[in-house]
Structure formats: C-alpha cells, structure tokens
Amino acid sequence: MSSFSSLQLCPELQYTLESLGYVEPTRIQSLAIPHALDGKDLLAEAQTGSGKTAAFALPLIEQLSRSPLASGERPVRGLILTPTRELAIQVADNTLAYGRELGIRVVSIYGGVRYEDQIRRLKRGADILVATPGRLIEMLLHQTVMLDKLETLVLDEADRMLDLGFIEDIRKVISFMPDKRQTLLFSATLGGSIATLAKELLHNPVRVSATPSNTTVSSIKQRAYYIDNKDKSDILCYLVDGCHWSQTLVFTRTKKRTDEVAAYLQREGISAASLHGDRTQRERNAALQAFVQGDVRVLVATDVAARGLDIESLPQVINYDLPNQPEAYVHRIGRTGRAGKSGLAISFVAPDERRFLADICSLIGKEIPLMGVPTIEKGKLVDGPLLSQIWTKKPSGSGAENQRSDGQSRKPTRQKKAGNPKQTPVSKRSGSAAGSKATSPDDKAKAEGNNAGRRSIFQR
Ligand code: AMP
Image (cartoon, rainbow, N blue to C red; front, top):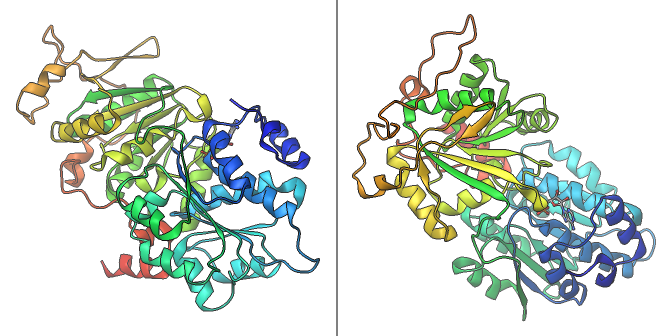
C-alpha cells in the first residue's frame, strides 16, 4: 500500500489528510489518484465505503490548485454528479473538508430545497459543483449556472444513476460542457449498461477496480434469520432492546412500511425516525441528523438511504425486508463495516423472501446460512439453529421452521412497556407485508426531490 506522500499531492492536502486521521490511502485511492492526476479518463469500480470520494476529490482539488485562474474569475471547473441528495450533501461536505487549506469553494445543488438559496451561493463562485442531475438541468436551462469552463466531470455511483433512469439527464448535462475535459466514472459495478455509458462518455479510459464487483467487505458479519412477516416487528424490538443497540439502521422495502416500523418502535419505547423519498428534504435531513447525533436509536429507511450515508462506525444494519434487487443488499450493508471497521448485517428472511436470499448469495459469491430466530444471552446475540435444510423444502409460509431442534418455539418474548397499546404485528395492521408486491424504492424524482417528483406524489 502506498503512502499519501508518494501520491504527489501538495503539502496543504497532505496536511489536511493527516489532520483528518487518514494514515494511508485506501486501495481505490492508490489505484485511481495517480491516473486522475495524469489527466486520464478513469473507469473505476469501487464499493461504497471504500474511500472513493477522496479518490476523485483529491486529484480534482490538486489539479485546480496547480492551475489557478486569474483573480476574479471563478467558473465551475469541477462537477461531481450524484444520484441522490443525501450523497450530494455528503460528497460536498467531504470535498469541502479536503480542499479547506486551499480555499476551494464547493457548492452543492439538489432538489427539494429552495432554488434561490442555491443560486445565491452559486453567485459567490464555485470551483467545484456537486449536483443531482434534475436540479442542475433546471439551472443550466435558466443559465443560473454555466459549465462552459468545466475541466473535470465526475460521475459518482453511476450504476445507481442508471438504475434511477438518469441516462437522458446525464446526456443533457454533458451537452452543456466542453468536449475537451477529463471524465472520471465511479461505479459499484462496471458491467452491462455502465460499460455502454463508459464507451459513450470516456476517452481511452484507464480501468481500475478496487474489489471484484458485488463482493461484500469481509469485516461485516452477515447473518440471516428466518422470521415470519408477522413476527418481524416484535423481533426487531427484542434485538434493539435486548442487545442495548444505540444506533441501528433498518431497511424496509416500501415507504409505507418504513413509517409503520418506525411508529411501532416508538410505541414500544424505542426512539426511531423514518427516512424515505416521500418525506420533505427538511424532514429527511432532520431524521438523519437525529440519528447521527444519537438522538434516535433506530433509523428506518428505504433504499434511498442505502447509498451515500456515511455514519462513523455504524455498528449494525438490519434488512427488515430483503431487497428484491440483490445489488441493493451490497449497498445497504455497506453502511456498516466502513473504512476497515467491523460491522454486523442482519437480514430478516420471511418464507416468501428466501428466493431473494438465494439471489444475494449468488451475486456476492458467498453463502449466508439461514438460521432460526436469534435469542439474546447476557446482552449478546445468539444465532438460532442452522436451517439450511429448508432450502430443500417447499416454502410452507407458516413460519413453522422457526422451531428449535428440541421442538420449542424460538420466538422471543419482550417485556412490554406499561401503557403501551396492545401490540399488533405490522403486517396485520397494514396489510403491507414484505411479501406483497414490492413498490420501487424511491424513484428518480424522489431521489432528487425535484418538482416533477413532488407533483407525482400528489397525483397518486
Ligand atoms: P467513502 O467511500 O468516500 O464514502 O468513504 C468512507 C469513509 O472512509 C469516510 O468516512 C471517509 O472519511 C473515510 N476515509 C476515506 N479515505 C480514508 C483513508 N485513506 N483513511 C481513513 N479513512 C478514510
């Protein structure tokens, strides 16, 4: 592994990295930074949590500082496109931190917040713009932002942008920038439509890969428990409460379910907030901030939160519902075990979700053994019995597999808080069990929070 000093970054950047506690570059940083500094186009495969933001932001900042413009000029010279608002905010914060000793101005623009405030910030000048495509196009069409002096374009989480249907928006944004530029494309996967996009946008790119695609980080302990839908909420409370977890990120498949699970936890005396694309940007920021600051113990989210969330040392992630797209699993559990720290990823697998687990295992090339309902002993999680034999059985849908080999039920009991309303399983109350037809997580417009997105919510 190289050191930052061998990467030919200026003393100000070296100093900043040292003060941030970065001792040595991560693998993607070692691989990508030298080529990016050489001015090459880059096709980089990197997982979330691998340090990819610094892999593109450091060379971008370094290049800007090497070729300062005449005083008074402050055009946008670097553009980082991200799929979601959360990621835009996080990437902008990190880039600002990396460039602070060099006085680099970073402005983020994304939907869901006041247009005028962003214009005001833009008017003061931006060296690097971090943007989601929809809001950026709006501004380009109104000529409130110009990209004619752009030197470097970064596409962050390009695979997610394609998933969200941003391809035409990307093309439109590119039509506003010079042909002669450097383009850095970062993606968790490089196959399929990403390869096509790369052909269209990149010129003789250098391809680097920090990990084989869709592998999960070995520092994350992965557990899958076979839990009937109607028992999921009880078991979630049991685990959070019994293991004294103070910061747990829970993923559900639909927005409605996200609110229901958060409400259930609250009724059970466990502080929780929900995060999904139907909440306003202000609500989303508040929920995230409360979770990061430790004001709420559980954040229940749809996949909109699966990318771009960087919470220092998040200890565990729970897939309350398994995602029906196996790639989403990799991104969800990538919220824990970041930057080499250990993490725990638990999946609740209902009878009708077993096929999703099989898809995930084949994608990541690793078997995640399916076990019975876990118990807690002395505040520690104890796995249920191995249930691998159920793979050969037809799904019963009865949850009868959640039995110990001695025949006793493993369903845990939890002391209910005095005054709590009678507990009713979420799936019964709402009728929106995990097995019901999955709605798409958060669509393109919701991810960005643009006006079209808001309209479609009201029209529904
Ligand atoms: P990212 O993949 O860019 O979201 O980064 C994941 C986390 O790793 C962030 O909290 C970064 O601050 C941190 N990080 C990035 N590069 C390094 C490094 N070289 N050493 C230590 N931490 C890092």
